[in-house]
Image 1 (cartoon, helix red, strand yellow):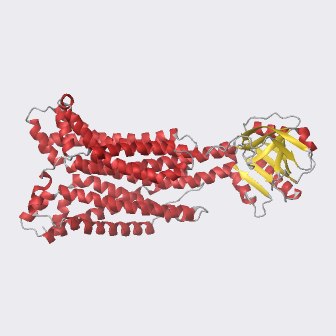
Image 2 (cartoon, helix red, strand yellow):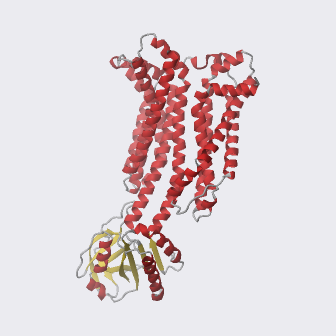
Image 3 (cartoon, rainbow, N blue to C red):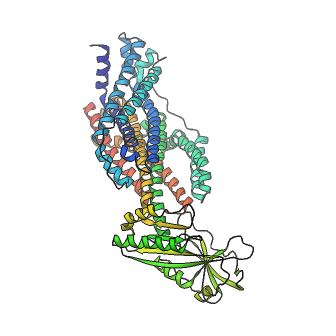
Length: 634
């Protein structure tokens, strides 16, 4: 048997330990390959938004590549620690340090090579399905045909081959300086039970509570200002939570003799405290990685729902056309005819609402104010689903644009009366309200029809036309065509055309690309966090077999054995994920406070989905782990 064959057989003999690492690495490679495949897709790059989307995919590749480096480095260090005894036996039988490092190097490169090939092959196999998903996520309106991604294959293979070779060099350095006695003892070397500092435990509680309170108390733009300091505080608090406060709580439970001596709590708490030092680091890493995943995906889903909902609420009409100052009557008439003709050709039923806006100057103000008649406002407001106003005589109502994101501006009256220059009129401002009846205008005044007709000194007038369709979603095609013919904002600024369906299509494509990128990155992070837990669990498998075999001789039943293992694995899986869920919930609540928009539904969906996936993963690992333990102890 050659030396290379020996290294290859070593990988096969440790396939259970390497399984999670291999699958997670292959998954990371597959996701990297998928992004590369989209970034180089000829159909996507030919679209108007394709350049920005391709940049987003390349950015995602960079994030995954950097994360994969640290993930693989951590994974390999865990494997080397679990195999120290094996390495010691090889050294005792005459293997030199150079041969040992060469063997580890070959093993790592071998696993990395097969993981890279497996990831690329899996990506190609699922490419058509992923392309179909992307078509729906990006709302492209056209198919993305399959193509053989040569550039994506070369980029992925080259990038990860370099990554695994670099990691292999790093891992062989870990073996330097290890004495034979340390290798022989391996994981059987006694571990000291960590001691908890009361001061640091209290600091952990103060940092976490303080961070949560600060994140939940700040509102509006203050959220973005508090984001970085609160994040740092919570990360430090989380580290001390697992390294200090958790140890302190375990020691406190052990002092409670009634609880400690009840059933199998002696075994559970003693073992957990004994290994807390190693578990604490894993818990911290999993909690932070999972929090990033939860918060990122929750934010992306929330942003998409928030902006799509706000666009629909703030723009109640299928089409809007505004003829500004400087637009000729001939141009205005021509544009309206084009809109009417397009709607009729597509057999779209609609109702058009017209309004005339007069601009009147007021004392000590540089810009004139806009005034609209009561009847035209109420007609359009009713069609938009907004409240109507009632004015008479010299009364007026100030109307401000209804902003559903970020909260509306204060509705306090800035002045009690409004004097119109050259009209010898002083209007009494009855109240201030909000409305989305005229989405193109931020604020204006509603006056009675009689008062509107009596206005003399008018600076200029503008025309507003709203098209209310029975089904605004059915106007996407005609809206796209009209937007091409009538740009939303022409260079001269004489008119503005707005299509709700076209705008929603643009938003869906933009956020669809971001969601597509973010969901896969979040999936990589989540799979990696599950892999960290798997590594921690199976690193101690051999020790657990010997420990439970000894305890079994003392009378531990199968039911009690399953109960103890289930509790231990539950703590391993759900303590860090539970902390991450709390972190994520606080982060998404802070996002709600920033934009004054409820993200409860989206947050519950994202966090609940992650918890469900973690629970399924827990059931699978628990079943296989108990099976391995029982098989070993007979």
